[in-house]
Structure formats: structure tokens, C-alpha cells
Length: 392
Image (tube, rainbow, N blue to C red; front, side):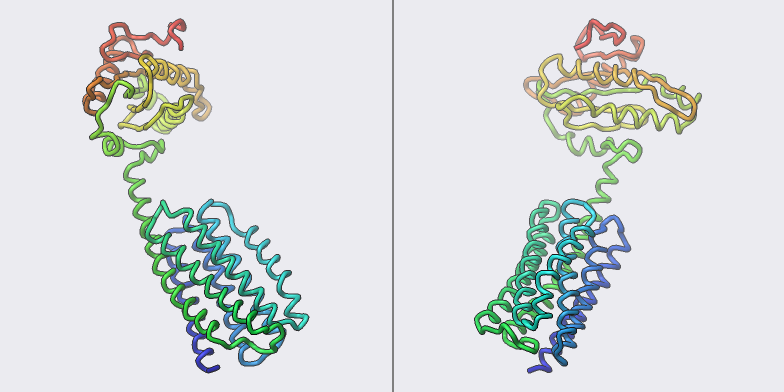
């Protein structure tokens, strides 16, 4: 029976080591997923703990079980910290260290005092809590990738329950002082569940990685790399089939005399102007549904739940704020203006392309009328931005 138990421990150690190598390779391929590196560190501790515990099953001793306890607690605490890092993006090392120190201070004195059974009960209960907490952290983020994350959450919780069984058997048998490693059906079941759990978690981690890579590539395909706004393709994918009603407005902006900025100050200055306007575009209103760069120096804004005239005032505010910005380019200060065209949908609904076309036509009228102004589609008088009486 002891040989079987040793074989199970060996299989568990190999499984943990394989998962560690797999996660490390996955992290190397996309280092922005830094929680994977935290899991690699956690598995280093766990593999070390398994080796130390395997030694304890052959030759008993306080030193061996204490080393195993310390490494295993460090591993499971770091595993939990990695799940928190995945959910929040915060660095995990302070949390992992605090949990590890607390776990060691709680259980290690029991082992040193000779109450090895009580110490192992504490280890099993703490491990169950940490694994269940890890599963809960992944469950809370399941909206990102429901399949892999739900599967990982279930496997972590099941692994935690197997540690509860180990603690329960020790408590029911009254094994407070043992002098040797526990050997019962719950221990064998625990190792089997952990082996299966690690295999499943490894597979799901790879699936999660692929899911995140696909989402990353999709975001890149839909994002204007210079400004961080949606690009034209993304704008039409999101709104292309939408019917636009009277409470939704489309605003098209175009930076005035942008070519002369590039010619006089260089393309780096032009890029700075574009980025500055993109930042300005999202400030000061809660009505923005979508902001996008259509291409070149042209931008679009989709405003939802706006009353008549409100979209025009928002466009005016954006244009005035941008005109007041001093954009530092090297040792030069560049100041720019922008023209805008506004169009709202009809009561019966209009296609997005139609409303966008009307807004673009209004923008052309604003340009033709002298720039630095807002023109509303179907509205006879363009709004001159130099007229402060038109401010909202």
C-alpha cells in the first residue's frame, strides 16, 4: 500500500512539474499574462513540497514534515494570489507573502511541538480554503471566457473538497499525534483528484490563453493603434446594421488644415495632434456611446439619449476645448481647430450609413463655410464657434 501511495505521490509531482513547464511556455509566448508566471512560481513551491512530503512518507521526522508544510503552504497561497492577480491585475507578491507567513505561523508550531496530526489537519483545511477561494476568483471573471474559467473554477473547488475529506478522516479517527504520514482512502483519493485536477487545469489554461490571444488580435483589428479609439471597421461592425432614431446623434469631426500641420511641423506633430484630439473627444459628456477614428484626421462620435440641440452643444464644447489646447511639439506650441457635422436619426429610424452620410455632408458645409464651426444636417445656419453667445 505504501508503494502505491509513493507511486501516486510521484505521479502527482510529475503532473505538477509538467503543468509548471506548460504554463511557463505559455507565459513566454505572451508575457502580458503575468498571472501565469505567478502560477509557475506557485508550482515550483508545490513540487518542492511534494518531494519533501514524499521523503516524509519514507522516513518520518519533524524536519521533513515541516519543510513539506512550508513549501506546500507557500505554493497554495501563491496559487490563490495568482487568481486574484488574474481578476484585478494587481501584483501578487505582497498578498502571497502575507498569506504564506500567516499559514506557516498558524500550523508550523503544531508540527514542531509534536502534534503532527493536528498540523496536517490545519494544512488540509487551509489548502481547501485557498483552493476554493482560487476557484471563486476565477468564477467571478467567467464572463471573459466562460468555458475555460468555469471549468478551472470547478476543478479548483473539487480539489479543495478532496483536502476537506483528508482533514475529516484525520479528525474522525482522532489522529492528533501520529509520528508518520497518514495513509488512508481519503489521502489516495486526494492525490487522484489533484492529478486529474492539474491535468484539467493545464488544458483549460491553454484554452484560456488561446481565448485571450484571439480576443487580443480581435481588439487589435478593431482599434486604431495611434489613438486607441475604435477604427472604421469596428464602428460599422458595431453600428452598421443599427436603425438610428431621433434620440441618437452621429457627429463627424475633421481637424482643420491638418495637412499644413504635417508639412510645417512633421508627421510626429500630426500624430500628437490626433492623439490630443482623441483624448479630448471622450471628455466632458456621459452621452458618448462610441468614439472612432474614421481615418486620417476624421473622427466620429455616436451619442445616445440626447435631446434636440444637445448633440450640437456637445460638439461645440468638444471643439472649443480642443481649440484652447496648447499642444507642445518639441519646442513649438501648436494650436488647432476642428469642424464638425451633426445629424440625428428620424422618428421612423434611419440606417446608420444614411445618418453618417448626412453628418459627413454637414461637416463639408462647415468646412466650406470657413471651418472652426459646427453644422447640423438640415439646419440652415452654421454655428460659428467664435460666437460665444451660442455656447451651451
